[in-house]
Length: 109
Image (spheres, rainbow, N blue to C red):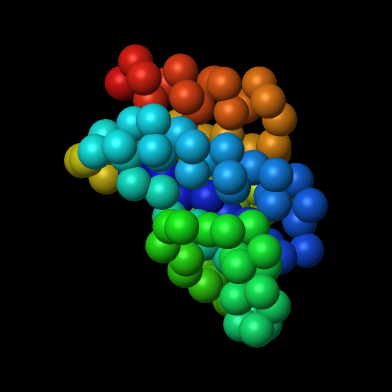
């Protein structure tokens, strides 16, 4: 499972999410992507998700309780969890290198 913490105000997040969706497509059946917005304005979340064209499950964490559980303090943040509910990777920030690292990690896992 890939959990991506994002915000509708985060410009790098808007670039990262489509790339994460491509990773999910590439490894269909191996991973599932969940997008978690840490905002509280549901209207703006819906607009942002539509603007980006998110095809995955979108969750809202306005109190940041889920983010805090995973020690997420900055976004974007991506957490990879295995089938035994163990955290296997934590990637903070968006960059081409981080996307490549995530793809390579999933490929080899």
